[in-house]
Length: 251
Image (cartoon, rainbow, N blue to C red; front, side, top):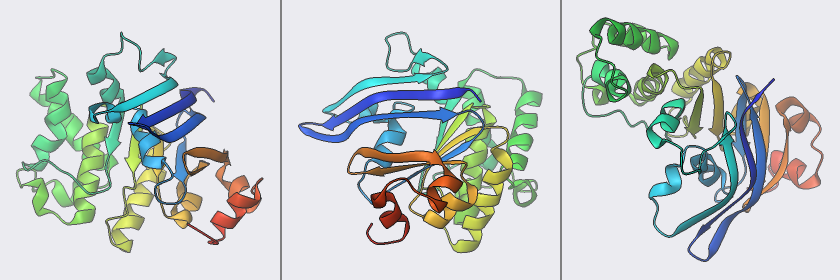
């Protein structure tokens, strides 16, 4: 398989405090990679480097190299709008915009300059189906997206990310604010979708990582400790510290 994103020696500092100490990690296309590790270990910080979501934070310094499809995303020629269309993001708290379901899903398409109503209609339906939320929304497309339950809102956010046909979707603990039933519905959706999209997901939930990811990266205190196939890491971690974390001895 091809690597769609590669990162080499990524350091990130907030002011004088270094939060990432040289992370090198490659992501394979059409696989789901989980980033695990204790709170504050740099998982979300690293995830946000992959589509330059950290750019807006003052006093931040990033060095090293991150390439998406062999293009340096921190290079002067990188178009941020284009990058974020190709590398979408779903956050921890469901965050649909305060307007209709239809307008939420159509939002990115309109920003991309698509005006063809028929095409937008088609993409709205297709994305809601992909995110397994079409049944609940097809008769309520005009309803405010924030009027739905938390789990439904999160799937609307996934549909919104998918509508622009991204190549990669970053997920920052997408189920941590949800109840167990909604969480398992999102997991099932991601299992279906990972044949068509590349997912990189931060999760605190080790069972979730073991159930749905193909690869797992274990971070601790801003360092990458271990990376490999999920089944190998969970059954036979190479490092004692990984084993201790997976067995709940800390974290």
